[in-house]
Length: 356
View 1 (cartoon, rainbow, N blue to C red):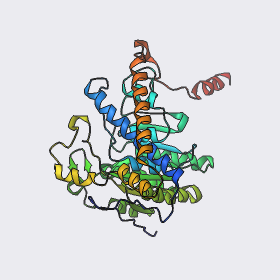
View 2 (cartoon, rainbow, N blue to C red; view 1 turned 45 degrees about the vertical axis):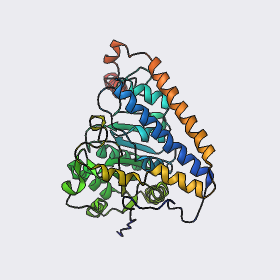
View 3 (tube, rainbow, N blue to C red; view 1 turned 180 degrees about the vertical axis):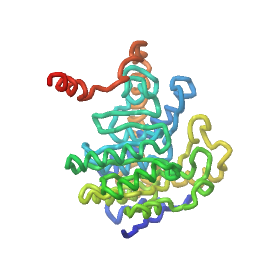
View 4 (cartoon, rainbow, N blue to C red; view 1 turned 90 degrees about the vertical axis):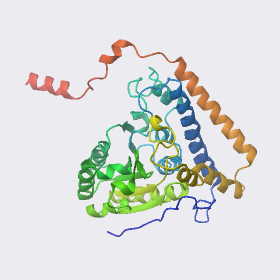
């Protein structure tokens, strides 16, 4: 199957205008900017809440990668599916989950999206087909493949987007799941968010293949690579993959080259010892929000005053989410025994067998 490669920009590229193929859509651009800026302001407050002890456990921030979630999920229909790993706050917001209920979940409160039982790494909302953040590296990739199988089995035309970090490609679950998807022709788009570091290990020290989208060749799967700091490039690559999955039920492996501006988690909040400040500064020259903002300013789609109003609005929205979460009650102790098992058809089946 032919390989289509979209070269990603290198760190520090002085390009201010993301790829738009000469087209401009002010309304869409505003929606994209709003989504990305909401994620940024939300994550900044999450860092503050974690430092104050309001968020416990692990907390992995999405700052720097907002163009990936926004560009990818802006292509989907409401009935499509999303499944992801533990760096899930930004994707949850981009999919349309309530900032109030997401923040309440991070605070471990009863009004959280999973009643305070999941926390930062396990956001879930069936109302928007967000099938969870998953904490075990690579374990969710077979689940996404199963979703693709279910779509095909039922004769639907939905698509499943599966986000993962680049370190997932070295796990057995990744290869087993992609082999099945390639063999059975399942409508899944596997999105590798290549932010260069699996925890503190650089990609070059962990993978024999640096262009990791090429791993799709092993499963006769269409594959591509795009610039994850350019929201338009992400949308273009995602649109092609989603169209292919929806029309022909063929999976795609998409490597999106991005960079996290924070550490792996709040345990190494900035850079730790595995990357230099100079490297971080160079990558921050291509902040995805800055690139989109400059594009909009240069094309007369946004004024500085409008940007300030939008920023103030989103800061107030995130403050409202904080206040809501702070006032939400703690889950009652007896809730520990709830949701341990899920209602299935087993009871009705057993009753039918007994009746016979």
